[in-house]
Length: 251
Image (cartoon, rainbow, N blue to C red; front, top):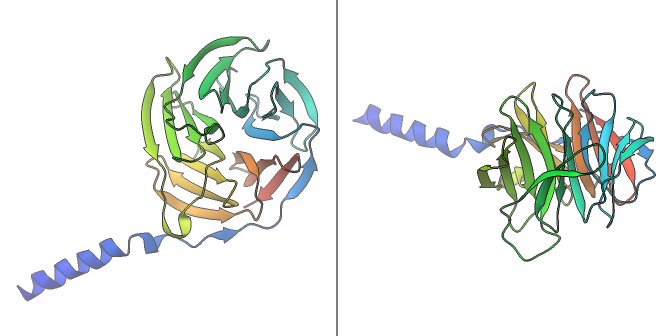
């Protein structure tokens, strides 16, 4: 009986200290900054050839832009958005996806800016600016991941086949891993990890696909509105919509 009580006590201690096993937040060194000639850039993704980035302007009538890794505009897609907040490209097909915050919609568009298909997202609030903010693609599972900024903070998974909602989960990491909002997301297919960017917390939380946090990075920079990560080179690309910049961090 004594041994049993000791075992129960040990298991309880392990359970209570589960979150304490997480590493403390890592402060990133100041990133290299590149000016972008785009008003209020928001959303970031690698192009299918991995040789450049896509970003969008969240101004009314904003477009999708292709930019170099030092922020130079290389081209644009003539799609005029309402309130664009995210972009993703399918590396297999080259298909482009954008998210419209105020419309609560995700759209697939072609190179001429024509809408191929669209779907309304399950975001239930009456605050126009607390809507979907970023998206990324998991080509292995053929899924599109979207985050809702806040009220509530949501992770949404859609099927790329038919835009059917596969999963909706509220994000609440808690403790020192808590994020005040979600302003961007990047899926790392090499390590099967999700990178959640927070504008208001000036931080990034990395999770497994189970959405359990693994580590946290502090950027020291608010107004980060889009993220892409080169895991091989250990580079984090973030667009800042307050200063119209592309900021590159090394981790």
